[in-house]
Length: 120
Image (cartoon, rainbow, N blue to C red):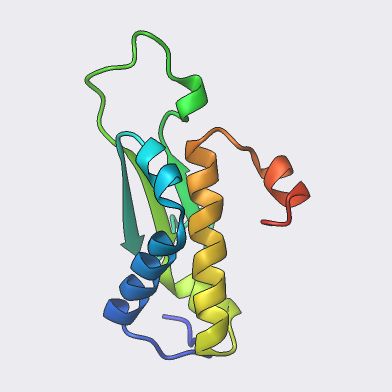
C-alpha cells in the first residue's frame, strides 16, 4: 500500500463524499436516475491513478428501450485522491470536484466539455 500525505479514515472520506453530494443542487440530484455512488479504496489495477469512474448509460444515451437494467455506478477512489492531496482541505476540494465530474458523466457531459468548464 502506498503512503499517502493525508491520513484519513475511510469513514471520514465517505462523509466528505456525502458532503459533496449535499452541495449538488436538489434539482440536479432529482434528475439523477438509476445510479448509485460508491467509495472504493483503489481503482482498477489498470489505472491506479484514477480518482473516479462512471459506469453505465448516461441519461442522454437512454432510449425508449432502457428498462430493467442494474443501476449505473459512480466510484470515488479514496487512496488516489489522498495521494495527490497535501491537506484535509485539499481532500475536501478534490472529492467535491471528482463527485461533480462523475455526476456530469451521468448527464452525458464528456471530459472535454468538463475541462472547458473548469472541472478538469
